[in-house]
Structures are given as structure tokens and as C-alpha cells.
Length: 257
Image 1 (cartoon, helix red, strand yellow):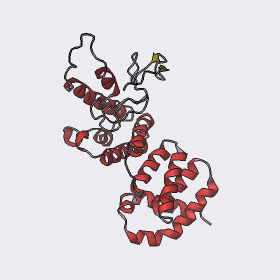
Image 2 (spheres, rainbow, N blue to C red; image 1 turned 45 degrees about the vertical axis):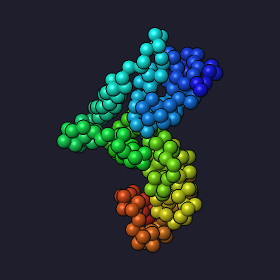
Image 3 (cartoon, helix red, strand yellow; image 1 turned 120 degrees about the vertical axis):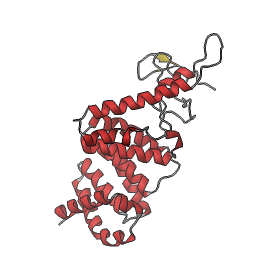
Image 4 (tube, rainbow, N blue to C red; image 1 turned 30 degrees about the horizontal axis):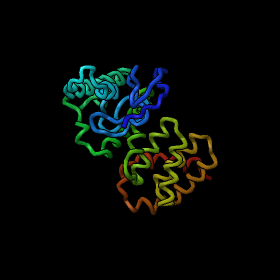
């Protein structure tokens, strides 16, 4: 049943009720994506599961005055794809244009991008992680922050997270300035495995972000002590994030007594 309690849309300030603001289409509490039925976070612009623009969802959920059947979903799907492509193009142009940046923003070979509907929720979350880190490394701050919000929500909505997923979510939080989220993911990893290298690396990064240098040095010492035995485990996540681990070890060796 649609919520009828009146509220104020935090996007446009208009009085609103139901699941979407009637003035601007912003989702309110209880809204769901029209395409995949996933819950929408209030104020979201895109569905975190399938990428459908929320504006299309709001308009589709409003019945016509004549009571006629709603129009085909196809135009909205096409429009959603166009919006996503436009965002990628604008983000790419906001940085200094180089062949490397162009290849990172657009699909290789100029073909179509991946079909989000065929990807698992974890694959979509991991794809957002890669995009956030790419923008971070290239210094494209606005696009990095935009996709960081989507990435964190994508990981939060997964039914379970392993150490690799928690590190990815924590790194997105760290590069976008959310130190407490990064620290929480580090604590959870280390609670399950006290010498896990990614938990220690993330803990040191989160501590430095929040200015807790004493805690950062403690993580550095633990990382140096744990590294030989942990590296011998040859975990998949250690292979995937080898560059981060090596960078953290160099930092630890330079600061640890």
C-alpha cells in the first residue's frame, strides 16, 4: 500500500506524499525501482541494482487520468541507457582528455557496454569499485564522489560480504572521505581474521584519514609482523590488491620504529 503520510521532498522542498515527489519525481520512503523492484534509497537518482534512472520510475508509477494502460517500458529503458552514457561522457570530458582516459570511460573497441541485467549484484558492486578507483587515480573528483555513493550502497545491499568485498567497500569510503565507514569495514575484517593484510591496510588508511597517527602506526607494526605468514597463504584478495599491500608495506617501513 502506498504511504499517504505527507512529508517534504528534500530535493525540491515541495510538500509530497506517497512514494515519489509529484513535483520532481524524487523517490520518498518505500519507493521501488519500476524495472527490477529493488528498494530505492530516498533521494536516489538511479537504481543501485539495475541502473534505471529514478525519474523514469516516478513517471511510470503515476496512472493516467483516462485510466488507460501504461505505455511500453522500452522508451524508458532506452532513455536510461542514454542518461548513463551521457554521465560517462561528461565525466570523461571533465578531466584532461587522453587516449588512456577515453578508453577507461568507454567500452573497448567502441562496442556496447555490459548489460547490467546479466550481472550479479556482486559483479555490479565490483564494477562500481573499479570505476571509483579509476576516477580517484585520475583525479576526477566529482565523478568519483558520484559513483562512490552508488558503490557503497551496492555493497551495503549485498546479502553477505567476504573480506575482499569489505575491503572494496572500505576503500571506496576512504577515497571519498568517509573514514568511519572505512574503519568499520577494517574492524569487521580483523574481528574475523586478526592478521588479515587487507584489514590492516584499510585500518591504517582510515586512521590516517581521520588524523589518528598513533593508531596508524599500530596498524603499520601489525602489518609488518603479519605480512610474511599471510603472504604465504596466497589468498585471492591478496593477489587482487597486491599493489595496495605493497604500498602500505613501504609506508609502514618508512614510519615504523
